[in-house]
Image 1 (cartoon, rainbow, N blue to C red):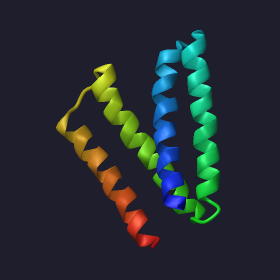
Image 2: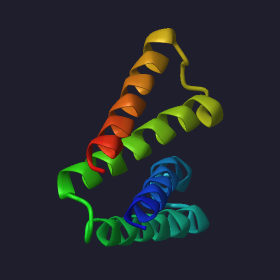
Image 3: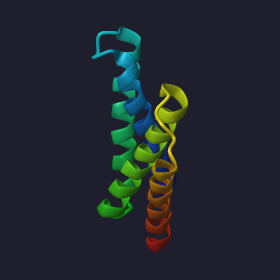
Length: 105
């Protein structure tokens, strides 16, 4: 169950990271509220996951999911460059996330 919480926490981290772009410096009410809610939910789910998982593993996987998802959505939604080097680096992060997952079982 901890890994499910951690995965969901990472997805909510993506939500708030991308949401920051749409808040326009927290001057837009709806995106700001949704971003703040995503922040709180993400941290609460991370806390639940860390009841069972080691903090180093949990935090690294949480930020990794957030980093990969945010980078990919930046490419898809915000027109950020999708260079081969950038995609390779995202792949390395994914490999690290999977490595930590399998190393902790």
